[in-house]
Length: 91
Image 1 (tube, rainbow, N blue to C red):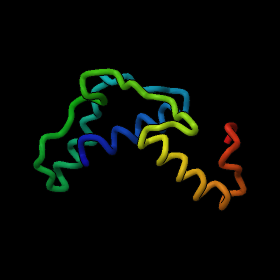
Image 2: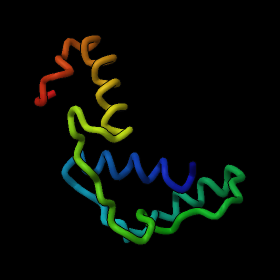
Image 3: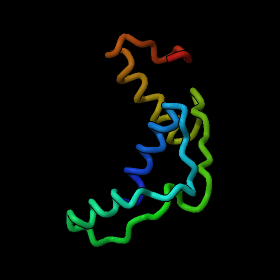
């Protein structure tokens, strides 16, 4: 959990803000220092990436992968609750 979740959210927010973070960016020491103060003894990552650039794949409506099906199901379950059309590619 400590290896990927905080970095993943940071990358997502940075992308959405139009300010992507390079995978070779060092993680601020304040983060690891804080975790050590909280008693975390596990090895912590030093960089924002895992040694290679991510290779995101676009979502394909009606696609065959498990991820395409999961996204489709999530859209159909949640979008109507927000007044959105799950079949509208703009949403």
